[in-house]
Length: 103
Image (tube, rainbow, N blue to C red; front, side, top):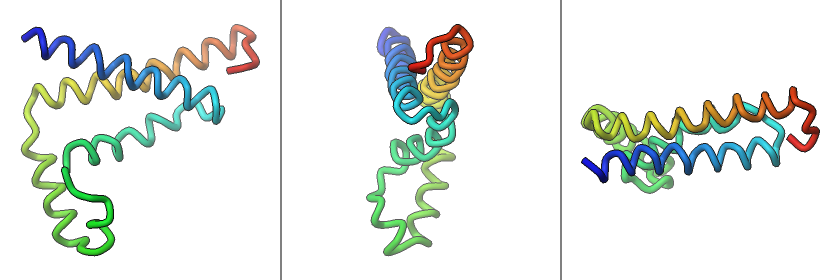
């Protein structure tokens, strides 16, 4: 149970930080929120990216099967990461409205 709570907190903090830095460097507030589903697929599918180009039928079938097999705990942890990217977008917008030109 402790690992579950730590995992949720860790994914939130990691993806908040990644999204914050990406937003700061590229000045695209919601970019990480759009990229996050692809990151989730790379985490869950356990397939090499090249496999999508060389054998797309099998790769996409395996990806859909593995996405439907994830548990509620996995969904909660991955959802915390997505929430981190969303919160980062709102923080960046708030900082920009507050006058921080760097953001």
